[in-house]
Image 1: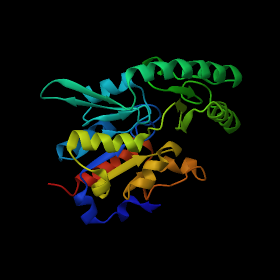
Image 2: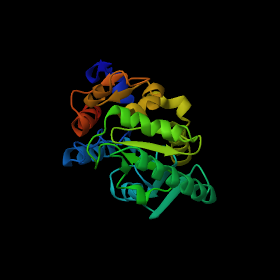
Image 3: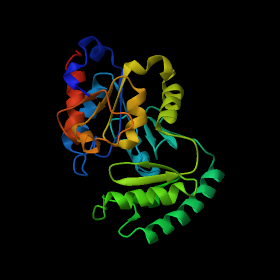
Length: 265
């Protein structure tokens, strides 16, 4: 991983937007700081797109799309995107699966999740589970005492054995049925909402993240950036980011925003 300062000036000036993880990338110790929020606003003020790409639930994403200085949000690890048209005052919601499929999958997943929290001591459904439409999130260190790696692996094994697609974030194991992912939905978002083919312009965007579930995005984007705490997962990333910040979490995101806005009038 190169230092963020190694990103060439011409590349910085050509960047059109930032896709970013939320937990431990925008946030610091579980909080969205005023500096990180202002960094998103500063990017927008300079004409750059800002789009969170997160595992957080639909209920949160509705609020994020409406109230944050963002241009849309991809949620539940690629299950949907939400885009709020501020002029029309209308929320656009696009899901990978139809409502009937989501309902059936949710019932199956909740039953499997109950098995997991029964069999893995200390694991629990995430506190935001009630606001999810398409997946389950098993908490291993957000609102429960941190579980050992062996317990996290057991959660993964139990879900995978039942045909569940899983991803590990810095705080949760997320599980769902289906072939969607963050990258696929990001491509659909940028095509539907901005008329762009990401295959032809991925070098115009930065992706920032911090954990193993960001690895496919790190691999796809030439200008991927890990905030400094991505080093906590050394040896666990299939594809590390191309660049790394000096700051951790929201301080690292603020560093990215300052780095981009400082070369724009």
